[in-house]
Image (tube, rainbow, N blue to C red):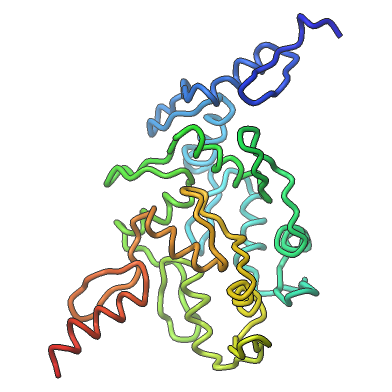
Length: 290
């Protein structure tokens, strides 16, 4: 093939055979975002990203809405996949390793590939760090570029992930979309609901053979074992800090989103860690009573 048709960009060592593709790729490294949405003002690197954004957020009545969460989708097929994955009551596909259940076979396959096999096929071209998901790699690249493309229109906080922005917005709206079907208590984040639901079962059949600590499900036991092994597979995509448990990562992410989901029912002060709320009550309020 003639070398004059070969376009190479040294920063990432990617090779392109069309100059238009090379120029589009260069925008990623230049931080230029020339394509701006006329409806909301958000800017994008590529025209295809702008088109996808418009389909997802600005097509009016054509959007498909989840009646449970209110989340919008550009296609009926995407809405159907969301309902099967998130809201389906039947989860016939069980993981033979940890026992976790899934509503779709593909979701189970991804779970086994990522969690148990540890497959990480997506590699950063800058530092060669591997990732299990392409979306995680995309967010990681922002660490190299310094880019935080998602902005809160209320307080100006910026984020590398749209999901982090959506979680942060609940600080301003007070939205708590996750409700316990036993007692009706509502939560702003899904993992908080899952942790709460354990209180209703009271069962802890899974016991750590090293220290004897008991757990209500196998996944919690597996996470606990990493305390003994030192393994830290859950890494914050914003700052790079690693954790042995996914819920510790979720709590840590509050420091980036600004969300403080734990409220003192006496004075209204908020905390992003439950233990700090408990300490606050013991020192400030219960200490005054005795």
